[in-house]
Length: 228
Image (cartoon, rainbow, N blue to C red; front, side, top):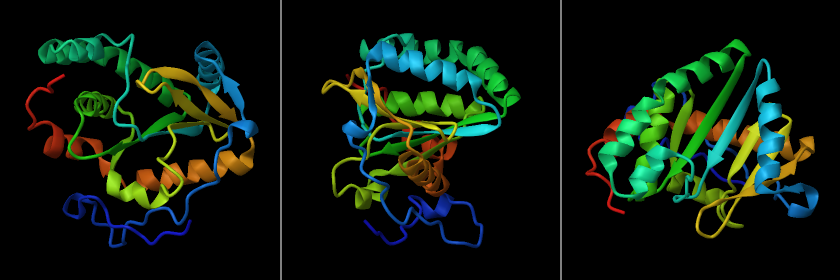
């Protein structure tokens, strides 16, 4: 589907490069389950992490479209779920040293893991928590950008954009979730005819997105604690 260039979500805060920010020209190919390999919850982790840890001098990319997930295993998210926002923020801050160490290790290997977060307004309670988490990750060196829902809807004639991770330009994971937002494995694609267009698409979304810190300062920080 061809689409016209779209404006930056917050033109006043976009960097003044002298050039218009352009969105992707088209939606990449449809991801059909039959063209990939279905991985279970455990199989996804077993496939993902060894390859992730071996990447050198290449970039990876993540696209998040859903507005609600269940982050079991995250103490900060669990405190947020239980309605204790102050504890959630305190637990989040306690992981900062681990994030800095992980980022240094990635940089030593020449591996940058970029993230693009689609944020609909009004923000869901989950997204208020996740965007706060992503700001911390950005402060620790992870490249993170935000795009609004209106910016991606021209590419969603066939349905919402998928939840995706592209590792090192070689492996594309269409991450699967249950209806309640619990992680349920992934479908792995390795055909360059699918991997490369989707990586290019996420790269262009990232280039058109807004800096995580600027978005959080304006849209998230002023909000009261989320009500679960």
